[in-house]
Image 1 (cartoon, helix red, strand yellow):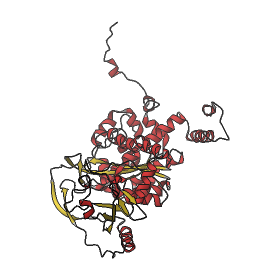
Image 2 (tube, rainbow, N blue to C red):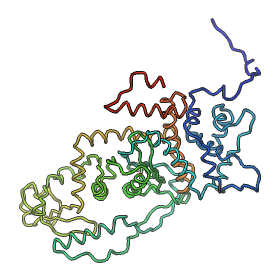
Image 3 (cartoon, one colour):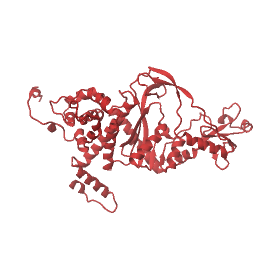
Image 4 (spheres, rainbow, N blue to C red):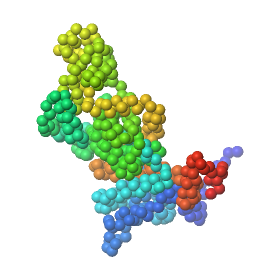
Length: 481
């Protein structure tokens, strides 16, 4: 039977509290149950006057406003305020009733400029949420997954100026130069002299956001962007986050991210990375500190029709390479970049039947380079074939790759509307804090079903005890608590 609804419900007067209208399993309820936001008062106490000025907007409300924006992927603060005005759950979360006016959308921006810009409040919020997850045993940092992704900057890619900048030296340059000179002395060569001044290179600097960096996206497209570097554990909790301009290579920031992760969660037993981090220094750094490197296979970049590098066998005893024609490439020198150069006798090469597959050199000289730390990369390659490394690397798609996918698809970070490294860093910390908070709250809710925090701790303890071989909880014990 066809029925028609009238519009009388629009004008019906009902008496309800805000709490009655918010679903019992709504995410905002789960978050409110998971963490007490009163710690924010201590973080901002020094930025407010205790005696003068008019009453401020509650700082907890200010932070909750921006948390709502990033939790639910709302594109701007202006739109966030519009959503809160009509969304009962959002009003409940910030503690405002039906009639209370929501703060203006510029309120958070003004407070950031006047109070929060030169503080570490956002890092502290991120740290407090992560600390809560660690206390509950949700974070398992024995294996770290480190990667980076690019976020488009709020800058027109066609508006830029060209400028000359000095190339930055590597953070391990002193160690590398020391080992290069030692290697040259061992091979009877003179140590290298003082390194010349860094070369200047031409870069494009955005006139809209000069702190962003030009990033080559694909083969042709170039955009100004920021790079979000992050490390997460096996459960997908972000442990460390750092933002750099988009033209900074991932491998240059690896050590900083690793050190911060060690300060927060302790030394991991394994670190999984993608091919961009498979460098001699990173391999050496991990193996020297007895951290298991989990790295992928990288295909050779030799031209088609030519011998691949692995077809030249390195002979450690005679310090040289054996070619497919069973001739020896002997040591020539160690260059300033840390590569030992090996070369053939041109007279031998000229008569070689495989010359056309070996080199295109006009003087018939085949050279092969080998980094002084190449043994570390080779050891990482050997570990790649182990069952443990295969299992760890397979989890990248479920951990760090999923973190970045959710960050862009669900939390509105495919691009940023903010400008400047400091503001974008603030945004990154808030987004990753929201992602950790969402996971923390969801896990607690599923585990506790709305129970008190003390009961949840007992459940976690019971679960841990159940995993021990010398003790087993009876079936149904968890639900009985």
